[in-house]
Length: 417
Image 1 (cartoon, helix red, strand yellow):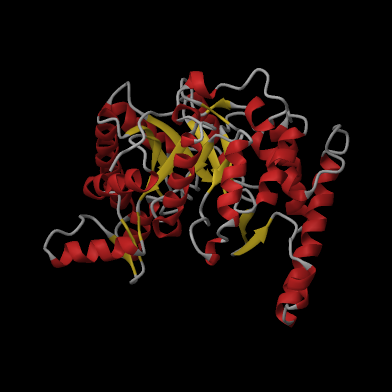
Image 2: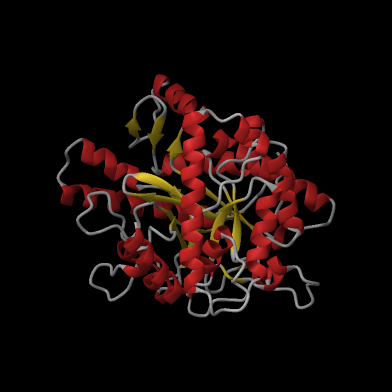
């Protein structure tokens, strides 16, 4: 296969000086110190691919629109759409490169490795049958396995490069490695032994990723985890401090450059909770150690064992007409809750010019993307109207005290709910 060569570089990703109002371009910041510049909001591709279930072809139109409007960072994974996400992104990049609307050095492409789902399970099972199984696989039923062993990393990076059509990925992340710890917990392994074994295996994964950097297959690597910054008493916690220590033990010139984690109005521990008696939160520790921070799940908050959606519902009149009674009740509850959340946030920002008319989605994005130390907020944009909404959020004034506003919003939400 012919790969598209090159990778994103600082010189070709810096904010445009005369961008003619292309807001995506004008507000870029470094992904990590010395790395490429990226837009404050990135294209999250968890639910894009080919087929109606992935909202195709609207998701393809949304991806094209976002890139043509100046957004320059795309986040995907080997398991998103069972590989269809990477295929769709690769097809779109090839098209825009051929049309000279975009060059390889202008765009940052992030993918991840870890999950064994869909076609990957069949690959893993065939290897088992042939006596060459992937080592250290954590299994959770028939449909979800997980692995970050070097053998699996080397296999998966080739598949990602092939689907994306790119010789070099800008960033490659270990995807939710805490699944290994969850398997240990289910197997009742002693917690201290589990943590020790986990980080031994993380080091082997980092060594494999360093090898891929030397081979020019990736430029930097990191960890995407739902448990970064989790409390010390949580069995499956993942520590950015230990991850950084492992990287430093490999080389002072290591390429561990990025962490990614969920963060939203109700899941705020990465910003407000101190970790490992360091005097730092996960985000401030990353900033101190020159590690870029990507936030995901800005609108989907896991709260009190349920999901709170931090946007207003967007259904057509025709769709609402076809709801059954349970769906109508759920719609009404969502509508009322989102209106309440919007009022609480607007109250906190009422003295700031440019925010009095901001809808809930834009209030969420603004309070997250202006936090010091945050490189990028990943936002699912599988519809073109989502892209337009993000653009409007970026057109609003910067929030120099975003952390204070976010803290006040969070405390008010705790008080009300």
